[in-house]
Image 1 (cartoon, helix red, strand yellow):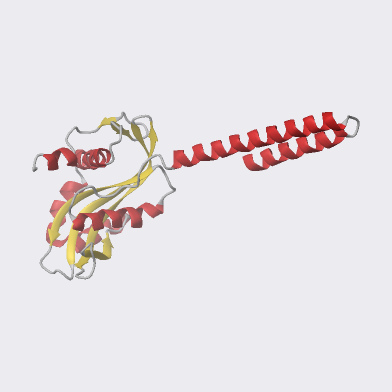
Image 2 (cartoon, one colour; image 1 turned 135 degrees about the horizontal axis):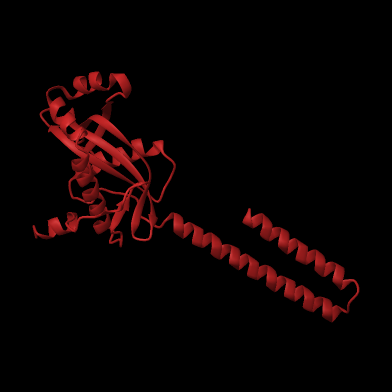
Length: 237
């Protein structure tokens, strides 16, 4: 819309110059044409500046990547973002929150990660990540090892617990002996918020951002913990 308005404005100036030029000397007409050309160039520069500024806003935050050295969890978190994050409109950043229930690595061709997998989409407002959308995807993620891949793992499938009346039935089917542990985490909102805040803090530290808190609609902002993945690994050095 802005580009059309700019072009219309330039065209109007050019038409105006043609009309004025009919009743004026060549010198005066040349001055008017020069002025119109300068105005048009200024308008183009302003438009380019506005476009650049708009692009900068859309790229204000880096995409989420698991900040730790574990290749396994890099694959897990990327799957959550790419698969479940695509269910929502684009925002400044999409950050997962994974509450791990149990990891079964007994079969390297079918590694099972039992967990409560959340996705949150945020826009940045000052030093606050403001939640725009999100959702819960409890279930079992299946992975296998890859000898010919630098990542070493690949997600092969995901058993998603059903909504509504089938929730308990499918949760018991997928989680099996880990059902009680799942329900304990699933119903513990405080524990899930601690995980969420820690993952955001890790993301902020890894990307050296000045974000200090996050906020859900209708709730007070939540301060991020000072301890993050950078401070954890620095203690190991």
